[in-house]
Image 1: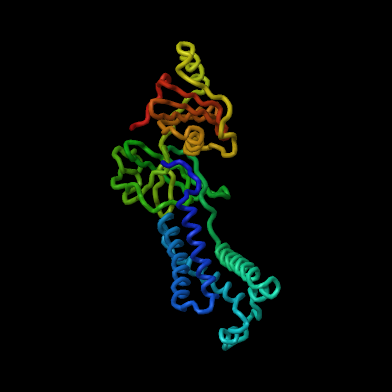
Image 2: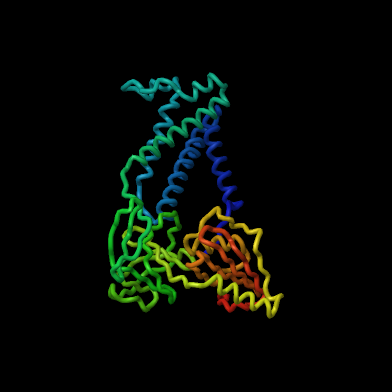
Length: 358
């Protein structure tokens, strides 16, 4: 599981390079004497690169196949062209009917602001209008409210899944998957975040729906389902086109009891630990309602550590994220509001938490 990172230098250079190509294609089209083949290749290369990126975003990262984005590209392109056709070629373009727009936005702005400023502003406004029109058409479709979560019913082994409006979507026998020796339970949550299309495994064995899977890559709802490791405690399984979140059990703990035990350990050896109680990074900007978010927040506090395990104190509403490094341990206590309460740094493993595997 990777830590959250900002934009890398490679990403920034890629964006700058793409912007330079598009600017070059735009300027060469307006310089006399430039070979028409050069401008044609640059224009088509820019268009096809947009198509390739959109296909990779949709098919590669989300795993969905669709050709619908071509229609929105068409809407944007024709909108841009319609409001920028120059007066010199308008009669050639509209040979058989009168145009709805009898002006060029770019030419109008060039007359008012000069060629350079008018061209830049005209292109910017045209792109903005074209994009807004394409997005407005995409927003006109009616969709079912996305599934947001579920809870257990009064019947053993049943789970209800609800949409954002609070309506029950479906009810089914609770689904289980065993991966790498751990049993994961369907949480009822549908994940809609963009992701890469590379899978980490596939369910190849199954048991009866009333049984718990006992072997790796086994479920109680069938075979052929692919999955990705989503976090330390979570996997996402593709079922009927949806990314369904499965999570293994998070053990319980007691903040009060462990604080008492730590006090006794420090009484025996005051140099064994260092306790931080202020100067934290996580101060509530992002809540920690689930274990994966709590782990990510703990990583922001202790970047040079690996995650060994997590536990939850339901009474105190507190996550305990134990982390290990080379010859060192750290335990981050963070509440569900995303506020770090305490970090315990250990030079030796006096608390007896499991260490991360090398």
